[in-house]
Amino acid sequence: MHLRRDLAVLLLAASLSGGVLAQSEVSLDDQTISVAVEDALHSARSLANADITVHIRDGFVTLSGFAATMDDIAEAGRLASSVRGVTGVKNKIRIAVPPSRG
Image (cartoon, rainbow, N blue to C red; front, side, top):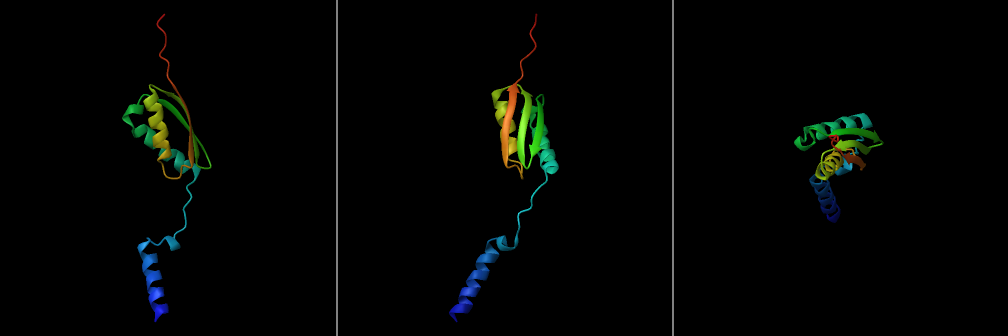
């Protein structure tokens, strides 16, 4: 009798866990992740005038280019790191220096 109850508890726990036991992690390829990161960056109004390049290798994103403010640079990093499949972000974006008037 205890065996049946234990089995029932185990099955209930597995069903409530969302089927974690039956799921395997799906790995996204770099191209898919790159497109998703670029979409996230392009959809941010604050980054509309930024010139950002996305490089990716094995899920690790490197951002480079120029943005208007430190807040914009930080936002780009946050957006990139929030994309599914990204394993890390190196943010090499710099503040764009306006051309001198002279």
